[in-house]
Image (tube, rainbow, N blue to C red; front, side, top):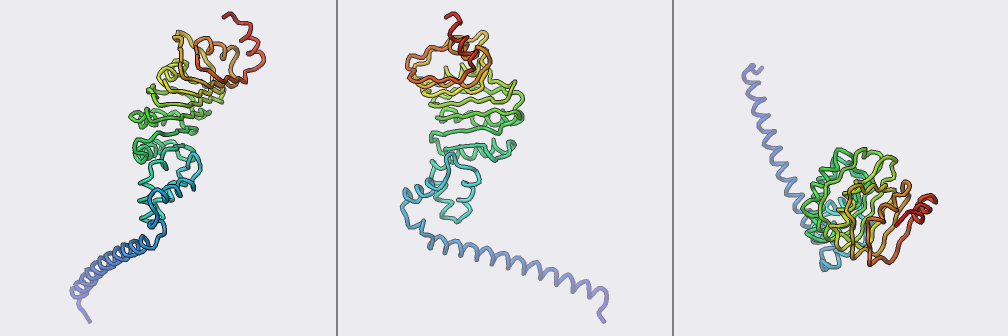
Length: 268
């Protein structure tokens, strides 16, 4: 029978051998995975197509705006698909926070902005909350001029809506919708946004109560389409009193009857 010391020594030798074999197995698994990846890359029909065609295939297969769930699939299919998706900036220019936890969206936004490589972007925000709105717009700060379309839907989860002010100099379309009673965009922020968006063509203000106290009047030279949704009494009229729109081609409003009567009867 082996002595206690001999058994301990034998156990230690076997343990050392197990560690070495695990390292060998891990190295073999890595080599196997790399070889399989190379084979998949060679056999993948996407790798035989010009980048323009393979990129267009990916673009045609995603919704507009694309969801995170959809875009996160491509880099995981294969090394070739990952390379193609990362080499297609247009794939990352339609950004929406739908389905993304608000606490994670600022990081996701930063990633999408980087992958878009300076391309113009469309941004849709519908799930922001009070705790993450500042972080989200901080992530957008250095790329605000890239935003061509901005849709903000502020619901009940956003109890205090205070947006930082950035010059969206490339903005062409904006929708602001506060369908939650008692919640409204800052009137000063709305006017500053219009003032600092010289290329704006379309503006939709839905459920956006407007109180332009101490607000300066604004002449916007490029705005062609203006839509006003349901407002509080006289809100739409107060807004129009502060706007001069020489290029306006289309105007629509769904104000209540009382608001329309007030609009016609109020002094100019």
